Amino acid sequence: MRRVVPGAWMVRFSALLCAVFLLLPLASLAQHVGARAIVNAWRMGGRSAVITSMTCTMLSMAVILVFGTPLAYMMSRRRTPFWRLVEFLMLIPLLMPPLVIGLLLMYVYGPYGGIGRALSQLGLVATNSALAVVLAQVYEALPYYLFAAQAAFSQVDRGVERASLSLGMGPLATFRRVTVPLALPGLCVGLAMAFARAIGAFGAVIVMAYYPSTLPVSIWISLQEQGLPAALPLAVLLLVVALPLPLLVVLWRRMRDASSPV
Image (cartoon, rainbow, N blue to C red; front, side):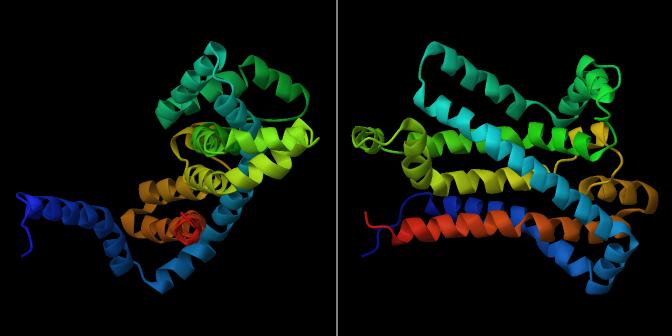
């Protein structure tokens, strides 16, 4: 006889309610936005916004990968008070409101900031430019990759690394040929999450770069100037370019874990 757990129906109901709450807006979006509206949005400025968002996001991902990976590795391996402090400080950008991030970046990299004036001497402008978008995206998305990569490196068996070193392979070669391949699934998930965060960044981006308009900024402009019906098709475009990569990476990770022997 099947045993009935007291309160099980409440758990199931709350789980179902939570799932419906999260999925209902997506269902409503699919119901109210047709293919013709999406095509019109693409022709009326959505194309340039998609290109701007994708180009800047790819540059941001390159910066995050190159500079965030070594930092994540050091945070996972060096458990000294200094590196624990670094790990704690890296939580601050993750928890900061995006609008505050934009204001602080503007203060540092804007035309009146020291770094901003130095960049202007080199012919670089860190406001209303692709550089400004990349700066805002990197600041918002880097912590997401950083902590995911730290967790991935922490799961790598250090005995395997020591065995590689004992066989004459140098530290850099061990990192490249042993550590990174073993941590690769977690690194990919972290990078995918950072991608989704960067391409959807709005608060910091709109402060730093109203132009060139990324998709989130274009959605806000359309909402302010033309209303919700004009903004929704652009929102669909943003979902189309932002969601597939993270979803596919998470699916790949789960299938890989399911097929791996215990």
